[in-house]
Length: 202
Image (cartoon, rainbow, N blue to C red; front, side, top):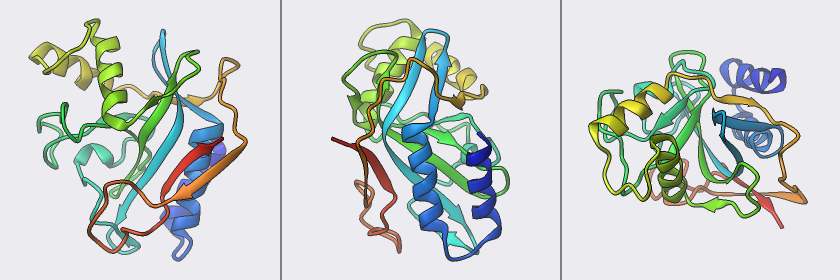
């Protein structure tokens, strides 16, 4: 975790190397970190995207800029319909799960696009599919189609827990190579072509 904090410190204090630093953060997510959501639910990311917005350094307009993406190191952010934490969670369309890394008044989070769950060999691919799988698991229901108030409360509580930890001996990811390319579904702003998506190559 010290390596991650050093990279974040570089983002906070330097100008000009932000893309390279974000790529290195992505690499850590794919090789040395996991997301421990519950005792029986661990995600090992296999595909991630970095989202960073700092007004004077990287004003990336593609970042949600929800307040939950600020100053919440190691905690989850379930995508919202607006910029306030009270806004409804996006569930069926455009939903996703980020891990927040910000240690201050800027926005920094990593979207988990695909991940292995526990010891499963095949990853769950796509941010919405991964979200649905996680929600079913933590809410103890199958094939949830719409979030109830109880489901929402469960996810809100989950967002208060630090879930980002160093990986363990159960990590079955095989990293032959890491590919880097532009983020998916980004069509506007100055950072459309910036290579901030990383995934484990085969």
